[in-house]
Image 1 (cartoon, rainbow, N blue to C red):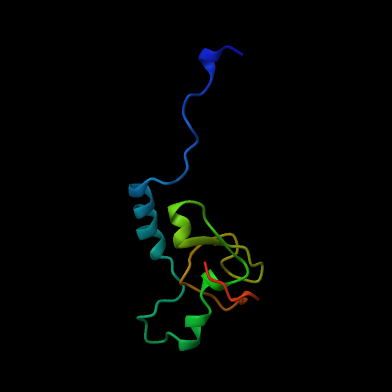
Image 2: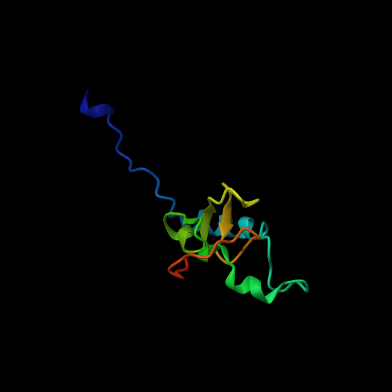
Length: 99
């Protein structure tokens, strides 16, 4: 292969601040539970996505707040979720970790 044809750019890492901020604002609208709603249950505070066994954090800056649900029992399986959101299929991690 001729060296002139090699790609000189690095793969995109997803750490573009403007792009990530736009994602954050769009994705926040898709939350299942919001603490300012009158029917918010106090026990949901401990049942947040970031503490679920099935929550997989995204890479890069978005991974600080967002992950993918991998719980087959959840309505949100295979969807990006805000770490402080939750669902009825929450499964607490054995080690009690978060994020």
